[in-house]
Image (tube, rainbow over the protein chains, first blue to last red):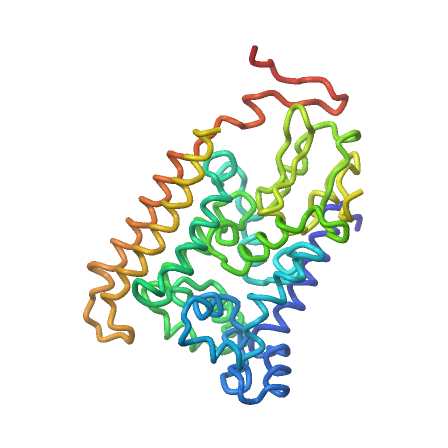
Length: 286
Length: 86
């Protein structure tokens, strides 16, 4: 069977998402178990080995609450979303989002089953970048107004419930809160299946993705920075990159050719593999 | 440029405000379920409304007519395929 370059890339990404699932999610959670062995007193060592042990959302809430700093300091796995992944994004872009995060991949792949005419395309309708940073800012500020809502609006938790249920443990669904149900519904249906690209949640409500996007954008012009970059001389402005981009980061300017919004791009390289003129590459700046 | 900055600021503030409001509303929930139904009668509808209003503010501020179809694209040969706005 012959796979087009785009579908071959998507298949490779699916393998990456399977690796992410094994690393972060119970019943495997190898990364959490590894940290638990290395740091038995940390949250990874004391909590159940599942996605909660390597939470990519809570540390953002903790970072804004000084009384939680000791917990942050004693739990190295919490530095993953605050430091390790953004630093990796400085070097190579938010590869975690595009190649490893199962919570982003799940709705993205579900959305492929829905015809495009039923999907909402946020691109050019709202200012995605401003909204993304707005939600991120809200998540950081809200602990001062009430309590952190990073858990209530969590899609990793819902993904863990789905994975656990797949492996025979559906007990997580018994702990569904109202906000949990709202989050699950938003993540999978309107912001997933019925959003062009299937990554509406990633676009607006993922603090880890936003932090990586910010790091990626801020360092995009550094000489070592690997990012999806284009060759404007060969671009014909056909719009294929814009069509296949799950994060709605690629756009075509009639004068300049393609443009990749580094705040949003997750370097999934679907556009690189789909470009008929091979105008896009994942490379350092020339 | 001023319009664009204002649009961005409104989008940012609308989104941040919606999340903050949702967080404040959640204080009405006792945390562990006591079947008080506060969530069904107050928190969920107001929370959904807050998020919807945030999106509406951001959406109305952020509508742009930058869509490729309206501005004209280029064909594989590099020629314009849509009528240009003069």
